[in-house]
Image (cartoon, rainbow over all chains, first blue to last red; front, side, top):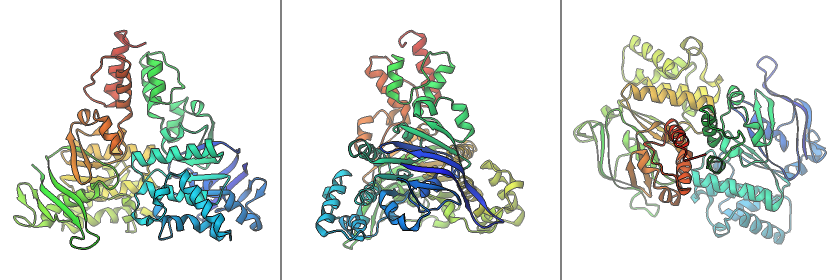
Length: 272
Length: 285
């Protein structure tokens, strides 16, 4: 479990202090697929960076499986447990071949070369990039690079994977295959996934959606519940999944439809 | 005709081992006042194509014609460039001046306009992206939110009053507020007569705004038609790595269920009205 206990975080010095997180209380349970939505500047990335101790709370504490990110002695262990993937794949790839890049983390753990080989192969297979093991990362497409970045995180065998806007620079196919990979990691490999996004249609895939606004969690629940009141969402700068939006318009025009519709398939079967 | 590309081909690093053909025999023309969506999978040549439109790249084959005159032959490149604005991806990374007003003034100043004209253009540009001049003009662009910075960067290009505005993924990374503001600013400019080329991955945004869609694949123009024609090529689009707007998906799935529908457009408003009409006829529900 990743637990936030009354966490606040301030950027900058006394005079120009801005508060990015305000009294966050949150528990991400093992096996969950959580999406975090919120407008620009709502604190999404700051929250994500607290999950593996890249940022340490100004007040309160973050516990990963009971270990506080404040304890510098356990930070190394926490980094292993909580993998992170960021927005821009070009900033995350360091080696001259795909397999070397993925091996970087396990090598730093001082593992046996045989064990490293196994982990690299397994990670490549999970993201479907086996045939690219010897390729040069800079020759890959954005979506492929992003999958290599995920594989790099997976080779550390993390329990948790935090993904910060990892699809925003990808084309539609690359971003849907990235989301499928995340879903598979969660369902088949039991990895807890936290997907930070600003795309409501992406949040539909999660079991649980959190909405962040001005550094606070303003909504937390299954997507059907979170996307119930669209006006309320608009006030905190969050849109709705397209199918939900269409359904809402139809409801407003007198068509009898449930407000739990989140996908086009659901909309079609309720319409017909 | 505002801009024409005639038989344009472009090869990166020709004659070297790294030679890469990015564009192949592109023929297309853009008229005054058009609103065009340019889509294509990663690596299809979108960025290379738009850099030809404003002369950042010169074709290795074929020619670019601006208002009937061949660029580089009949007219100088810079005289065409004055009327063609290009907003790069993440343009906010190019903000540099100490105030919003100074940053936006950079373009019109470089056009050699008189001081009072520069000032009025700056004011107009700030207002046209929906920001209040009094509140923003003297602020540092670096203290603004991501969405506000993007708007300021776009205002900087609008201040040069382009007749053709090209935007590369202007919405990526923006939240609901930012997207709405940016799209409002672009639509307003288009209503005032400027042609717009919008490069975007978000098909839902494309279908809401444009009157024409150009699909690029492997350096060629694969489709070039009205959105309601292009987006019915669903199998083709998915095969090359693109997707269709959610409104199109809805129509296709309703059709699969045997409903007789042929919408005039895939614009959200029209789709909703079509479904409503269907429901009233008792076809659905």
